[in-house]
Image (cartoon, rainbow, N blue to C red; front, side, top):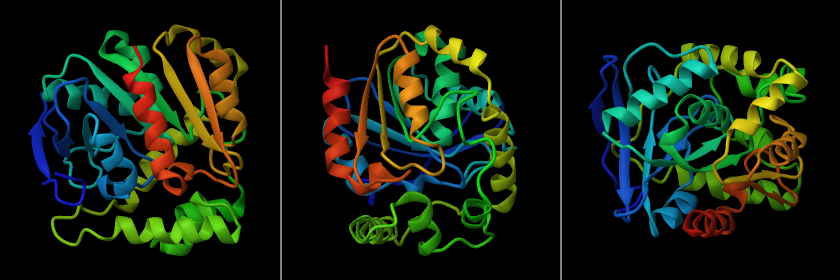
Length: 280
């Protein structure tokens, strides 16, 4: 089973939220729970990336409360998004997971580890940054125009996720084609209420504060930090901050790439993820 054929499933948590999720891949080891980006639902994930990872381990993609096909109220802080993720993981009766956090999902992944440190074995932080980091508290007017547009299209994704080069944009169009390959049983689209709640969480997390970087010392798990060399949403400097302050981190920076480097280099990054998750 692969991402394009895995059925949408549901599970109800003690909180009352009914979460929509897909679970597939090679079972038997520690499952990888994916935490997605601003305005993303399950179908934002690149099948080329996820299926390569699923060939070696079980993957779980899900919508937070109020996002996509999940019920409930959308959280408005990263801390509450993390509590929400923990509620979903608990509903599946999982006691140990690996976390793959992209963008906002990377903020959430850090908060999950800080709130429930013994739940997480290994951590992947892609295109993301620490609380109190640099340059993402207030996006530029042009970036906001693309990120907040009521009805986003391929051009918005290309601007936000890919570098303004012919090669990167071509890879971006391939990504757009892959994420729209699935026609049946797609996830529900995200709403403007989701956009606004998540934007509130991002702005709060992004208030600059060097003192908050000290929190990263509490994350002892092996961590893979990765980004493109020109991330305009969570500037690449934040990946260096993460790698420098996390006690057990490695860093990979991809060339000619923006926030969506993991969709520009899906097979290459999946290979790094599998290598990292399989390490002793």
